[in-house]
Image (cartoon, rainbow, N blue to C red):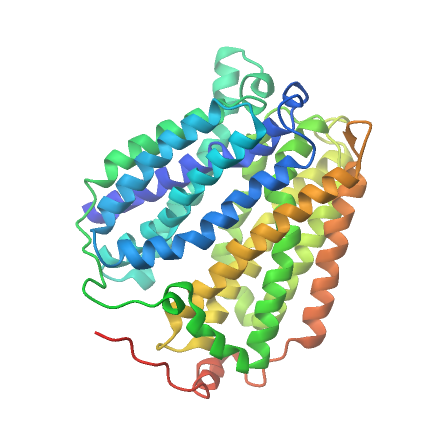
Length: 430
């Protein structure tokens, strides 16, 4: 790699290290018994919705400010420094309402950075279609390193990793410190001028609403509806897995959860082979079914019997399914959307997909997970078997709906030809 690629690789590593350092174990902190006086049952799901609100606001900030007025690396640096301060503030709060609003303010600054790091990379790489995956994988590595670091530090110092890290706000402090470093580092990234400086902008463009015309394609309409629905059970994993693992006897929660990111890398490398063998429909279907299978494994998993007990291995397998869950559904969905949209509305289509999944899906899923937690809590304890079987059943129903309603009348190689049936996109004013 050249010097620019190395700088971008470090940027992506720090971006996801900062996020993975605390978000993966947020549920363990909020659901810890010693914190029950501060956070009520069901609040974990509500807390997760802040990421969804951030994903909805992010297109406005990126599309109306970063793309038109300021250099991307400057906007990214300012957002990360502001986010570091907000995350530090959040770590000090023990009032549930104040915690929610502080976390919401943080995600308003953080979610736009996910798109901005991609923008900087695409702008400064000579052949982004070939080299960007090698930059983006640094993010997954950063998330893994963050998760493994707590267990390693605990073993070196003799501390109890669960009591010292997992059930405390310390991971948020690690994330805040990393974001501060990243924020300063951003000002030394390659200069990336605003790509749409001087151009007019509309709300429909920013939110990707121009892609609504693609709903005239029945297959795409089914895909978007099922994408929204499958993101509802998805939030059960992001919000509650760390809490659940702590309750069933796992100490190094963050370290064990990195199994998911490791499998993500492995299946990402295997995706071209699966595409040739399975095609879009069955890739998406397997991704949906994997979410349901993961929750069934969680429903009957347990760590109390030791590392080689069948119940513990169920936990391992459930975490390892993350690669299929994420790559087969989300990455395949992004590729499918790109193929369907055509060059005129490609950006709008991807923006709309993000709005539906990370935005609306996260909101609905977070509130649903919080409600299910409250309904399955008896005498202050969650019935985890019942808790996980509910999203498992829902994911299974979505998969059945998708299987019987999703149909592409042309082969995968002709998807872009089918998109030509769409009317031409209106030209934006100069």
